[in-house]
Structure formats: structure tokens, C-alpha cells
Length: 537
Image (cartoon, rainbow, N blue to C red; front, side):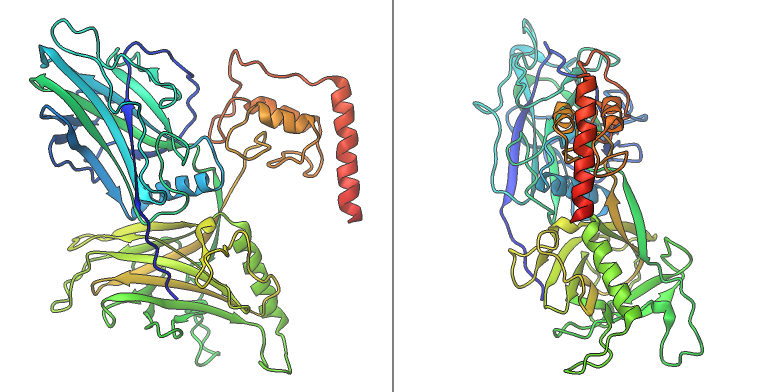
């Protein structure tokens, strides 16, 4: 039942601009850090440039930035790039794609950009800098009027990048602490924005930089503090399986340590060989180990948890109420969550003559008695010959789960049968080699909305005030859900102007609408009507 996902690679290119810069907003919310280059290049590479983690140029986070230098004149197809199909950065990009698919409009890629033109010579020298983002999802997309536009630098030049395009950079702010040759850039992400990463979870994400110019000498560029903002809200986590249950010697033939997980045995999928081990434990002291050495290549739904409350299948249905209650509880939790996550640990072992893997990826499915089979595939571990143990977290947005037989059915829109007598969770693996992996802390992540963001679009703004003023309905209420009252206004006012990942302080100088006494009275009346209607329904 594996669905094969194929789509065109989306590419976007945008000019990165401007010396004579007008600040368009200085209230930068906290964001999710992707790359800071403190321990190395974070998997970045280049084909026609030299990149190093530098301590001398453009450092804004920690002690080092990524330096791109020794660039040749002319258009450079690869000044520096990074590709992720797994790991924490992959999870962050996946979350950003899911946020965009859910309608969030404030998802941005942010980074700090500096340059050094000390060694540039010649009256006709010029230089431009650009970036691109690739992912599975929407097809080719390019941004920029007339391509990469810029001015001259060097002897007699008036300046570098004399053009600022507000459609590309929403809040470019000069980094005065670093001087005039540094910018903070925040570029909107999304199908109608400057850069695009597709309409949902992808199989990989790539970002990189390009240059264009004619110069003598060397141009140095520095990148630091690369992060995503507006994509991920704070979350609460509920662990469903941690494999800490001790075995009960009284129940012969059942090993409670597996917590119901068994080798997969359906749809001609070979099973994972299972065991409970201490290696790879990330929550408690034990983990579920799967052994791929007996089936060293290919895809399989190899691990299954199956709950069936019907103890007498057939016409004479007999339902176990304890199992049924657990099924309904799990289905409700899955449908209410935003992401499923689990930790995977891998320690390379030479299994010659079996082949070493070049990749191992993982996925999850949920199914019920109606035959709905919602599946999605996350990242994995792409490590060959690693001498040390590697642990990564796989996160898969629940919005990306689609039915294996009908892609128009999704977990979030169609859902599972809430009173189903059967519920199954599966874990898949896909690899081209033979290794052993541990899985632990299988959990659901649920986003916690910020009070004041009443339309839940990621920003506390005037639109939320209008929704409050009109009597709701409100999301992310702080006081008495289902009512609209003065406490909701106070919560909105305290966070006005911030994204949901912001600090929650007031924005100085912002015009904050003040409610009238009559508006508060009317809202109290409307709120009481809402509550009355809900109680009578």
C-alpha cells in the first residue's frame, strides 16, 4: 500500500538587495534556527566557490559565520547550498511547508548577510547575489524583474545593489552593529510569495545562493543565523509509546514490553525483526529495535500496532469495552494533533557481505475498519560508515496524511471512523542496505495557539481585533472558550504586532484600537447568546 510521490522540483530565485535601505519593520519575532555554523558548515557545500565557517565577517549568532569566497566572475550556479532529507532542519522545513499548506501567510526564511568588497578592483566591476529554494511540491517558480539586477562596485562606483524591492524583502533592516555592509533579510515563503517550498510535506528541501558579476580580485560574502519564522508554534507532546512496560510473566505468550507492537504481516510486506533494547533509548531506558539485516533492501510496513475490540468477528459482534475505549481515545488524539514524531537511532555496523545503506527513511500510517489507510512519509538517516551513534527525530505533519487508495481523502479533512472497532498504526522503513535501528518516544505534537491570534493565522494583528469586535468566533481564547469578552481584548492587546512565536510585549508606537464601553456590553451579550446556543444544541 505504498503510494509513490513524485513531483517537479520547485525553484525560486530572488535578488538580494540594497545598500541605501529603508527599514520596513524592526520587530523581529523569535524564529527556529536552522544554521549557525558554530560546529562546522552544517552540511553546506559548493561546486564553484570556497566556503568555510569564518570568525571574521558577518557573525550575528555565536562566534562563526559561513564565508563564501574565491568566486569567479560571471554567473555562478552554486555559490553554496545545502540539501536535507532528514534531521532537525528537514523537520523545520517540513513544518514550514505544512504551515503554508494550512494557510499561514507569515512564514519567512530569515538570515543575516554581509559582504566585503576590499579586494574588488576595476571601474566596470559589479556584483549581485541571489538565492534559491528547492523542494518537492509546486513546479518551477522564479522571482525577479529582469533577472538579477544591480549596480557597479569598484573604482568610481556609486554603490552595491542600489535597488530595494519591497515585494521580495519584507523587513530588511541594516545591521548597524556590523556596519553598512550587512543586512538582516526576511523573505516570505509560499506559492504566491518570493520563495516557494511546495504545498505540503516534501521528500527533501534545499536552499542555496548564486552570484553574478564581473570583477577583479575577490568578493567575500558571509551568511549567519539562518532561521525560519512563523512556521512552528509552541507544542505540547503526548508520548503514546515508549516501550517501558515490564513483561508480565503470568501472561504466557504475550510480551508486554512491546506495548502491542508486532512484526508487520499484511499486504505482502516483510516484517521487521523486533526486540526491546537499552540502546537508542530517548525516553526512559528502553527502545523498540528493528532489524533490517534479514530484509536488507526495499520498502515495508514492518511494524504494526493493531487494536480490535470485536472479540467475536462476524454476525454475532461482541465488543470489548476497554479496548473500544482505547481505540476511540487514540483516534481522537490523532485527529486533534498537528504532528506525529518519533526518535530513530542508528549505529553503523559492518555487515559484509551485506550492502551498506546509502539511505533509510521512515513513514507512518493510520487505518480503521472502513479501509481508510492514511499514510505519510518523513525523513530518515542518511549515514554510511558512521563510527558513532546517530539519533534523529522524524516529524510528520498530520495534514500531509493521505489515503493510499484515494489521494482526495486526507486525515485532517475526512478523518477516521471515531467509533471504529479496529485501529492500526504502522511504521514503515525503506532502505537499500542492511542495518539495525532503534525507535523510541512515539508521540503526538499539538500546537499551542497564542492568545490574541483569534483567526489563527500566525500574527496578532488588526484582523484579530475586528473578529473580537464582531463577536467571534475566536480561536486561541484565553478566557472562557465560547464567549467573547473584555479578557479576550486584553490578551489581544498585550500581543498586538507580534507573530505567535514572539515575546508578547507591546509594539511601541503601534496604534492599538480601544474598545468603547458600549462595545464591551454588546460583546458580553453576544457571548452569552453563543454559550446559550451551544448548551441548547
